[in-house]
Image 1 (cartoon, rainbow, N blue to C red):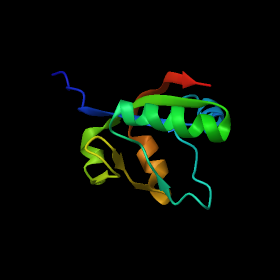
Image 2: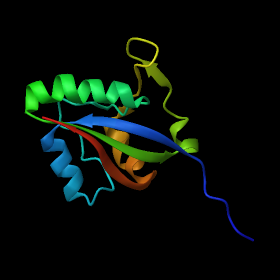
Image 3: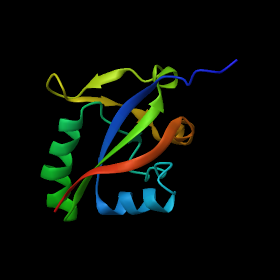
Length: 118
């Protein structure tokens, strides 16, 4: 009997060069621990929203912005209600920093860069 893979949800994360280097150091499989001033990890549910943040915020503050895409076990994600941070497509998940290691354990496959802005 063949086991069907569990369904996944596609998430995006706008990021700057420092965080991206840490993801690279983690073999594109996990997000680095949050800094003390970062109590929440915010992946987003809409690619266009991620592009806007990477292009308009990360480039201005960090000199470059990247949009990453990754898959997470959909059943696991049910514990994080979708948060509307603005308009209809400005949707995020708020993952407490202390739960990030468990979140990372539910990433299916790798984290990939899908857009780069300078």
